[in-house]
Every structure is written in structure tokens, then in C-alpha cells.
Image 1: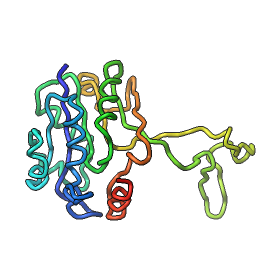
Image 2 (image 1 turned 90 degrees about the vertical axis):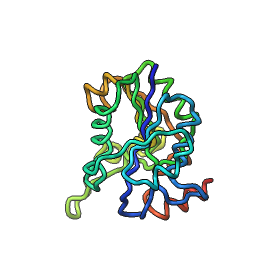
Image 3 (image 1 turned 180 degrees about the horizontal axis):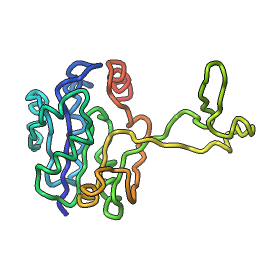
Length: 218
């Protein structure tokens, strides 16, 4: 099979200047995920989709290829999914399409290999992490009125044995079968499987505090 990996990394960032090349433990942020993707040895092509020469220069020695990200997909309003769907129209058809966010630097090559393995019998595979909060205790407030969202509080079901685990996308990677993805334009439709990454590998970098936290884990 022909597997394509894309790492989208625009130059602009609002909360942390030059985020994608900001040093994390001595390496530019984007280099962490790029090394994991390359080390996984599961992809025939690895593209760095960027509008910033400095970002590509930070990983150009790793055997990756540059995709020049269009200006309209490098704005604050642009969505990664939209940019990736348009990119699929620009490249030759492959069997699978995956993209990896440089803001999730601690995902491992093993996580990636697990994802590709699951993709052989799924429409898409998403990196997932457990939500640490007990969301069954969540409420909304209408003025000073408390309105429980779930039944647990009203039924007194707050013991741990009544609490389910919930998960959310960690943001590290999204993998899909090419033809299905072209049709659905979404990674969450069809037969979707997940790779659960532990909390310590699910750090999402947006601020200098996130950098410091990731470095403390490392």
C-alpha cells in the first residue's frame, strides 16, 4: 500500500510566537513529531505543508518533502481539515492519508505504527486520550440555577462504579483510507478506531506553560 503522511505547520501563531519552531528540550517543536513519523517507517512520502522557510529548514535533513501551503490556508481563520482536504486534490492518489500536528510532540513511533495497523480494517484512525474530568458531574448554569447535564447527580450515582470513562481526540494524528476520506471529507464518519495515548504523551502545545510542562515530562 502507498501511505502518505502530512505535517501541517503554518508560520503564524497567536499565543506563542513561532510556535512550530519554538525550542522544546533543545529541538524545534516540529522536529519531534517529524522524527516520530519518519522513525515509524510506515510512510512512502512525508510532506511538510508550510508557508515558512524556517519551519521546513528545521526538518529538511530528515528526508521529507515540502508542500507550499497556500496563503488562504495559512491564516488564523483557516482550519487544518480544510487545508488537508484541499491538499489531497493536489497530490497523486494514495491508499491512505494521514496528518500529524507538530503541537503534539510526544506521540511515539509505536503509537503511529499501531494506528496504521488498525487502519487496515477501518475507515479512519484517530489518536485519543482520556478526559481526566468526571464529566457525569457536569452542569450548566442559567443565571444562578444549576442544571445537571447527566442523570448521575439527580440519581445520586456519584460513586466511581457509576462513572464511565470518556475520551477525546488528542490532536496528534488523524489517519484515513484515501477513497473513503475523499467521499466523506471527515475522519469521524464510517468505521472509526482510536489509538489511546496516555496523558503524558498527549500534551498539546499552545503556550510557554505547555512547553515547560512538556519539558518537565521529558
